[in-house]
Length: 67
Image 1: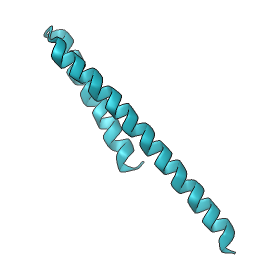
Image 2 (image 1 turned 120 degrees about the horizontal axis):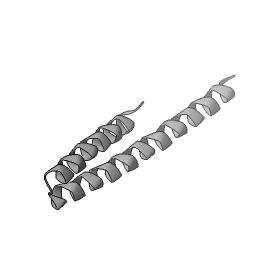
Image 3 (image 1 turned 30 degrees about the vertical axis):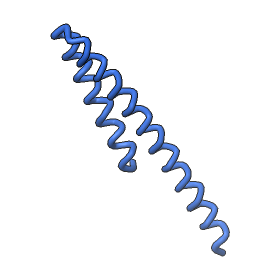
C-alpha cells in the first residue's frame, strides 16, 4: 500500500464521519463536505492503485530484461 492509497482511505473514513455527523446534527454543509471528502479519498485511492500497478509492471519488465 502506497501513501496515496493510505491517504485516500483516511479521507474516505473522515468523509464518512463528517457526513454522519452532519446528518445527525442536520447540518447540510457538513454532510456535503463529508461527501466531498469521501469522493476525493476515493480518487486518491484509485490514483494510488494505478501508481502501484505501474510500478509493478515497470519492475516486472525491468526484471525480465535484466538477464
